[in-house]
Image (tube, rainbow, N blue to C red):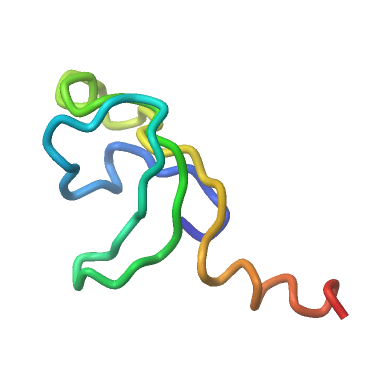
Length: 73
């Protein structure tokens, strides 16, 4: 994530039956949570989408606090 939306090309798997505009937790390949966002497309739409399509809209990620720490104090 790192402050960006998630493209289909960067996605490995998605919960079966997920709808669009639902909250989503984004994990890495080792099942470590990276951040969260809102699904831009449902599971069925993602299967048909091209690789440059946005599938998760970024809301926050775990590194965001560290990157912005200087501005918070």
